[in-house]
Every structure is written in C-alpha cells, then in structure tokens.
Length: 232
Image 1 (cartoon, one colour):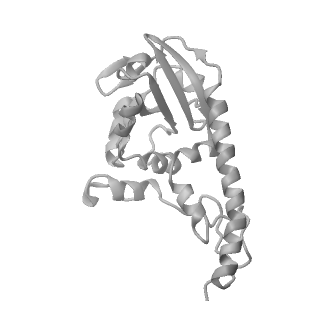
Image 2 (cartoon, one colour):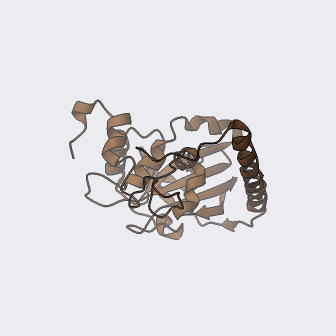
Image 3 (cartoon, one colour):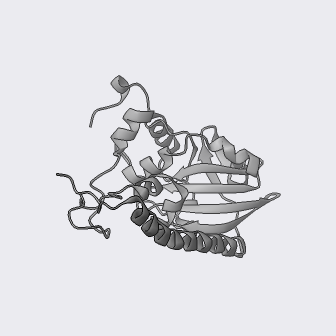
C-alpha cells in the first residue's frame, strides 16, 4: 500500500492547515521584503560586450531589443555533446510565452558558451521558445559567473541609453524561484521525492537528480516530431 498522510476529520485538517498558513504567510512577507531589498541593490556599470546571435555579432545593449530590462539565463554547455544539461534544458523549457514581459519593458534570453550554430540547433531540437546568444568569443559568460564548463546562472541588467548595468545575480537553487516546476512539486503530498528532503517515514524518496525530465524528454515533448528527434 502506498504511504498516505494521517487521516483526520475536516475540523482537525482545517486547524493544522491554519497553523501552516501562518508560516506560509510569513514566508510570503519575507519574499516581499527580499524583493524590496533587491530593488534597492546598487548596480555595476558594464563594459561593452559583443555576443553572437542568429544574425551575427550583436552588442549586449542591442540584446535588450529596445527594452530597458533584461534577464539572461546562462545555460550550461558541453562542447560536442549531443544532449546538454538536463537541468538547464528543462528549466528553460518552462518558458513558453516570454513575450508577456513586453508589458513590463523587459526581455528574457538564453546565453551559452557553445558556438551559435550548435546552440541554435539545440534550441530547435528541444523546442525552446527563448532567443539564444553565444558567448563563445566573449568573456561575458565568465564575467557573469558562468564560465565555460562551470555552471549556470541568472543575471539581470538595466539599460540607460547605450549604457548597461548589472543589477542582480543568482545561481544554483537561487534559480528555482523563477520557474514553476519545483513550486508545483513542493505542494504535492510527496514533494520532490528526493532523499535530502525532510519527509515522513515511508514517503517515496530517490537519490537527487535521478528523477524528472531528461533533455531527451524535453525534446520529445516540445521539439520536432518524435521521428526526427535522435534516440538516446
């Protein structure tokens, strides 16, 4: 029999839910306070960077495409690999409607150290909806905390005319708040089902990184028709 929570009557359930709600509301207020502090962070003026886009070299300031705010996801990249980081592939696959940021004068793009041809081919293979740029010939990735072969990151920038400022950075689990995957999993009775999590006895738990979408799964779900997706 599968593990299930304690079974109680409706009034008992509502009492315990109310106790949890106190902590949830406190967490919401803390997240609001964190966001307020983030808005008050100083900024760093950046030198001019040139990336490579689908149409060739492009200045970082032009990646904004006329907007004043820019979110950049630095996607991990392994040169010559058929399938790239499943975490990065899955994370960026969540964003199917990036144009909603237009109303907020913002844009969201992917940057990777892979050659632009390889990066765009991978984007198509996994059905990614974001615009991709390459830093193969630029120190931008390393300067923004995501050097070649050494991880992923999110950076946020502000543009004032032709001047670009770096306003925020995160990596690791700091990126979780930007996606819905873990937020949905965390409200499920069994959670993420990873061994590091605090869970009742008998709850299904597996080694970290052994569950979830692979890059091949993302390609099968969002990419070209299945017969054109290379097998594992």
